[in-house]
Image (cartoon, rainbow, N blue to C red; front, side, top):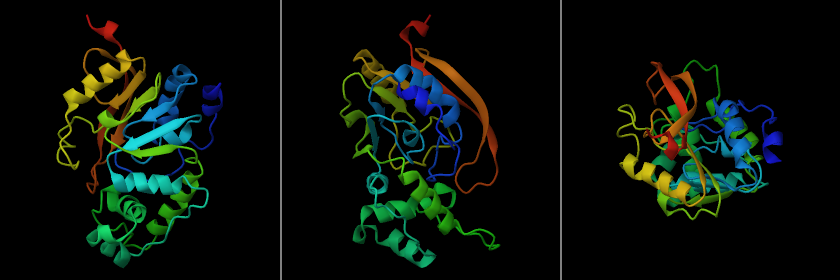
Length: 253
């Protein structure tokens, strides 16, 4: 079965594609729980982001995201011939100001991998002390990750417009409902609508898991851990309890 081999994936915590809210740090802890229940189902991620979870599973995989530039980058990375480019600060600023002139995947690469704190075109990531070459690190990390993305179907879509194959396994990592994340996403995210969509998908026969800090009462917390976090360019860290939920209507008293 897939999950037996997947649990043994090597270097699950290696540095890969940078992305705000990445679950790379906790993947090895939450994947075993989900993979045991997945069986032969299609793995679907409606908020695939930096693909730091989907790159660690096997079998049929679908990753979707509303950011068309990120999806273009992931589709490019999934090609066997992919090689990440070296982009200077001057080129970064040019891409930032002229997104429509360049291929979307190059814009997606610069906007996420070369931006400080993985903030979409926030500022060029550099080490003023000259100790690290972040551009070269990004290239190395993305090239390494690309090998694990071959065969994944990446789709530009919102979660609620995505066509999900019958009896799929759905893992969601949506924008978290916190004060700290307000204003950090292009569009307002309707959390109530999202939770109802999860219920509807489970009713249709899908297995639904969600990463969040909190969830409605009919979602059971199956894993949790306190971790350190940093938001964007703020060097100050704070503690938060990451949780993994599964829709469980019997959990309601």
